[in-house]
Length: 297
Image (tube, rainbow, N blue to C red; front, side, top):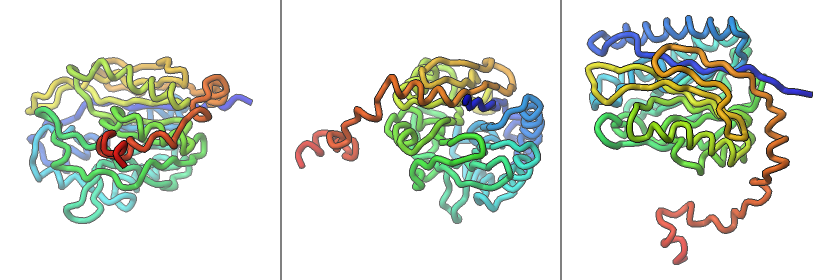
């Protein structure tokens, strides 16, 4: 029997400039997303993912402690509580990326997963934290994730999460497959330029290598006063064969929707037996800082 699940991705530009107070910036983005979530519900979306740090700008473009004020506890904070109500209202699974405070001074880039009845299922904390070329100063804000690579059994599918820079690392993507993910969502904030060509290369490769669907989300627009480039949208779904089956525009707020037939996962894995043919006993160098160090043991 076919297992078709309608899924959605929300890409959106920041609503207000950074010269406004943080509560106002946050409220404006939440209000915008509530309208977009309503659009997704109208389109009968069953699983929905929002973009990275959805309720504000991509503040890692600068290093300023004022942005610590955007943190919330997960799941006790007000944004997750609100999204639990919204999820239950629409009978929709929602993946909600937020800036999490574990304790004062210990912050994570986190995505909470909420089931269709509003139940909080758990969270994923971004593992790989960039601190690269001007504009991506994430180590100033985030501690590397410490909760592994969980997969959440939702009402409609088994869902995993990878966040933005994580997508450059195939190891965690493989673990999500081994842990049973049927759909992996990657909420992101990435700009045109050096890595744009990888946007439609790496994640379809993860989908092929692991036999699951991927939903890749990117915000849109330029965020002043910073000048790190344009967030180019182009959010998409790809299937376990690596084919992009739905994609958003480059410039506008949008709900990207696709019907995912989860039966394709078994069909593809019966052809490409990548999990069967793995050789984990030969992969020791992957857990060492360098392969040469592992070879010397």
